[in-house]
Amino acid sequence: MSVLELKSEIQRRAEEEASKILENARKEAEKLLAEANSKVEALRKEKTRSLMRSLETEERAELAISRMDQKGMILQAKSQWAGRVFEEAGKRLAEMAEKGGSDYRELLSKLILEGILKIKGNKFIAEVDSKDVDAIKKELKPILDRAAKIRNEKIELEIKALSTDSMGGIILSTEDMTRYYNNTLEARLSSARQNLAGEIHKIMFKAGE
Amino acid sequence: MSIEIRELQELIVHEKEAEQKVRKAREQAEGILKKAREEAESTVQAAESDPHQMKSREAKKEEIARKKAEIEKEYEQKIATLNKVAEENFEKAVAFVTKEILKVES
Image 1 (cartoon, rainbow over the protein chains, first blue to last red):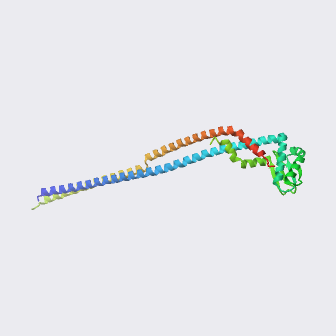
Image 2: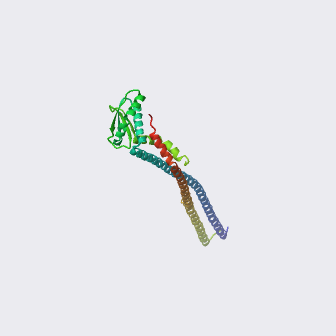
Image 3: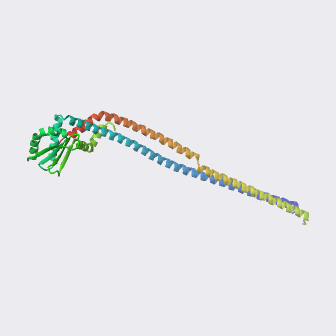
């Protein structure tokens, strides 16, 4: 092999090696980018899936809270309406008691008789608002007669003025004060608030549900 | 075959030039790989802070706000209906409560 041929061979081998090195590098670079793209694609898919799951959960929770808040407002409105009903009923009862007409006097008699039916004993004290004391005393005989007839025994009843202000009605207690029955209009109104809420809702909102 | 010193020297120079060429190719190859790695890293990083995700989040927030407004409107309507019906039935309810309170067992 001549020197010229040797030179040519050296040149060829160097070019071949350089070309191989560059080709390998390009292939490696392509592979790296392809892997990166594939990773990005997978990452994007996973992130999108995860994001959508999270956003949907967020949406469900936020809308559920919103509905609950609104339902709460409906309940609040219903409760306010029920409150107004009892408030108005209380006003009307107070007016009735204030006027002290025959209806109210009859009511007081009935309230006393109901108390006598509810608690044991035959000697009672009926406490009424001071303005009602005289009216009740006038009705005392018929009350005692009816009470005796119902209980089948002689009934004694003392009428006293309540020491506190009352809307009306009576507090009946046994003479020894061991048992009592609160039949004031306030107590009856309070009991009605507890017992009639369901009925009131039916009457008030049956077409509004 | 006999090679003269001068020719041998020329061959050595030639060999060195060839080595230089290969070295240069290696440097170029390193450059190509470095650039590819940087590009790959940057692509992955860009995907991690994907603006598309931000857009999806914003869109969903707007959708939720719209649905919430619809719910509020729906319930405002319900409350308005409820108030109307309650107003109509108010007197009846008061009469019922008053009657029940005055109902006495005797």
